[in-house]
Length: 90
Image (cartoon, rainbow, N blue to C red; front, side):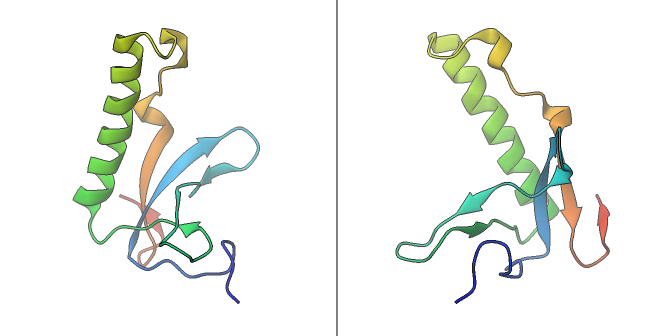
């Protein structure tokens, strides 16, 4: 059985998050129903950037609604789109 760490990406692009201990990594996971979680990937650069924008906007809505503290906002600079084929950030 393939697990989260060995399953290859489904699509070309990933969103990487800047982490303190591991540097830039794909930490975005999804699960398709009964499958084990796996790292998410995207068909296009634009879709990956939209996912980042949606995350930042969702967090800002929580701050605006008072359900998250302003100091817990996410910095857009903490996310990058990685091209698995070219092996570089785009």
